[in-house]
Length: 135
Length: 133
Image (cartoon, rainbow over the protein chains, first blue to last red):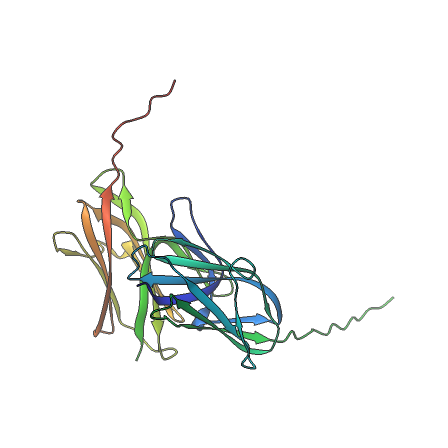
């Protein structure tokens, strides 16, 4: 049964024409820091012990106030896999509450592989601009 | 104590202007047209966890050929090791591949840890060249 041995969040990830993984903008310290709003991100999971069996991923997102929301494939995310790399594309994910969101990913139903990916949301600090002019 | 969480090989890895990691062409096998050849550039990316900020790191890198010989860079321009935040980027240039088989890329870290990945090098033979009319 496939096990996720590591995962990361990034701006975007894709497979090139020869099926090799490319990752753009992986976050430092494993924590993605974004402003409050709607974002696009990709979750990259690296599998071990994968033997072409059917993957039944269950993705859940926990908001800073502890509310769990299960993500639906097709509406919330799409996924693709090549070899041992599994990508979850989130084209529009709403991260609006300041604090830390947690992704949890489980594969299959028998022995769930849980992992925790954190997204820290900060509020937008509007910049004050003072214009000084002389006419 | 810092430890290596994962390591992989790719064509190119770099940090963008927000100091975020980008990796192009993560590879698990190398298909080459003929042997012997020297690969212009290959990069290894390793992720460190539990690292103390600004802690000095002792990093070593070597490649084992299919017949078990460990080889290193022949001159200092052939290898570049960059440690940034929790990532180690190793650039190796002019990697000599002389035979098909499994090559082991090993990263030694702080004298106590050794992590390696095995990458098969295979000759991609073109048996029947296409004729164009």
